[in-house]
Image 1 (cartoon, one colour):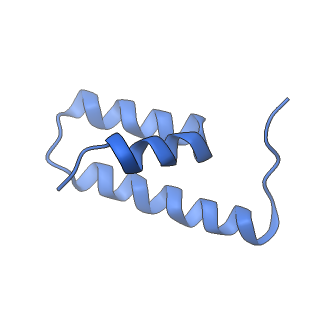
Image 2 (image 1 turned 135 degrees about the vertical axis):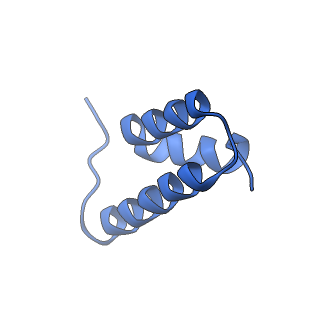
Amino acid sequence: MGIEVGGFFGLILLILNVWAIVRVVQSAAGTGSKVLWIVLILLLPVFGLIMWFFFGPKG
């Protein structure tokens, strides 16, 4: 039982997830940390994005 996301909200979520992944890759964090954040964002799109926003690597 998962969260079904479609339409305009799904498109916005996809754009935000891609943006978050690009920001993680560009950050100065270590490789292991980057991989962990990318996996979290991909497996839990809504929750992972929120967690990345508050706790993810900055800069």
